[in-house]
Amino acid sequence: MPQGGANSERVLILAPHGRDAEVASNLLIEAGNHTCICTDLTRLCLELEKGAAFAVLSEEAIIDSDHSELSSWVRGQPPWSDIPIVLLTAHGDSPERVERAHKYQDVLGNVTYLERPFHPTTLVSVARSAIRSRRRQYEARALLERYLLLARELQHRSKNLLTVIRSLASASLPDSPARESFFARLHALARAQDLLLEGDTRGASIKDLVVQALESFGERVVSIGPHVYLNANAAQGFALILQELATNAAKYGALSGPSGTIRVEWAREACSPDALVFRWRERGGPPASPPKRKGFGTMLLEVAVPSADAPPRFEYSRDGFYFELKAALEKPNPNEP
Image 1: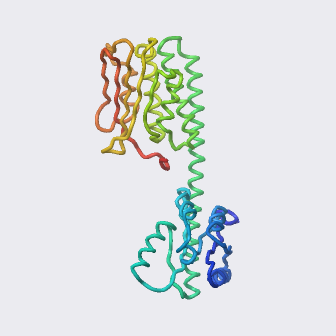
Image 2: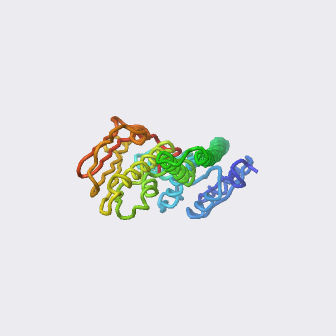
Image 3: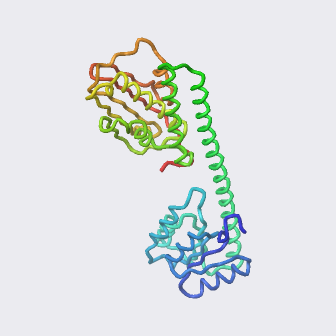
């Protein structure tokens, strides 16, 4: 079976006028290719879903047709795929033809133009190049799938390692506030790992991290921000930051009393899309005062996520505690939705 599957090397043909479909199919069959002639664009899209090496379309098949379904399929291909399309066009050159060519490029993506009449060997040569390109795409898919499999295995092993560390700590550390803080941070990392696994190890949305960390506080927490997608390192860092802020708020801050509230906001910086501004504001609790000494929690808030251009801001006032971080974001793998 071909590397891409049973249908991966067949050629789809849509040329409903004249004998173009029959001629193209016969030439490709003689060259050793498997072909499938489609009657319309809907059938073509259905066959594309089943698999193909490339497609041959006549210009007449799309020039006056609603090709939104085909365009949607082309845009919706997975990251590894860029299916070649050969477009059979009439001979000639005009401003309208150039304009149509740009339009076809937008609709079809990876398109090659083949003017009629053409020599049979020209079509066969184009077919071989298209199939060779498609095979390389299947190879890229196989490598990507292997990478994702290995990454998921590594994530599972990391989660198991966190469980082992917790067991060792339970057996080794005496009961103390420090032990409870350690377990809470470890638990935050484990929950972040769960989100990463749900996202196929690519990363996690900061919105999901905020909801996960603060859902137990109900309506006392308001969170506002878009679904900014974080890579694995940034997601783990924000999980620790949120756990630390929530724990401090429950012990000493706005959540330690009955009427305190927290407002969490985040957004990409308008002038720097690779930076995320994160804000945590507490109100209605006891007055906030700076700690007498810099503990591990404060250091964690400073370094868990790399800053974009300045250290995080800590503000302590009668109104409550305020924390602001401008985080430098790396592009998630493989893409951000």
